[in-house]
Length: 245
Image (cartoon, rainbow, N blue to C red; front, side, top):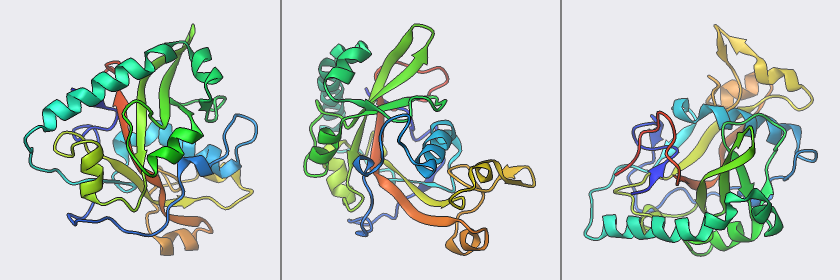
């Protein structure tokens, strides 16, 4: 079965409301962010670098789909997704092949646990339909020899209902997540990313600020949500990773 970078056991994020449809407010997709190591904005850089290290402890800033009772065929459907994905991305073990085919690294010069190589066209397609063979992003870890392919990320629009997410990847086995309630430091103050209070960070995905009122008081910019729904599918077992069924 698939193993999620952020599995139910590994992430203690708040659950999405158990409704038939998620909030329909507009949400920026990954394709709206500037790609590349030299052209990304200061805000993009700070958010991404922090997120890459924060996922296991993002209870204030991650909303996850609620658990769902297994339905007939869920396990077989999940296994088929992994089989399709594994075949489709095998060629990208050579990162040069990924680059040649349009996967662009996001902030490659910013230290991260996992690097996202995103293909904008796949992200656009994912806004309309799910294709297990066309993940929005490839996930790599840096090694002494270069990049090691460890998985992929699927995306879906923020407006997607739980049933629509379930139709893509069974919610009884995998829980999608979305980044929420983020406070971004004042523009022009990069050092604010390291600001702390009582030994805890104030801003970003690990920050203690999780409301608009508190963010306004700190001079930051409040983001109710960032990007759309995401699922990280790890094709290479990760140390200490809690896998799904």
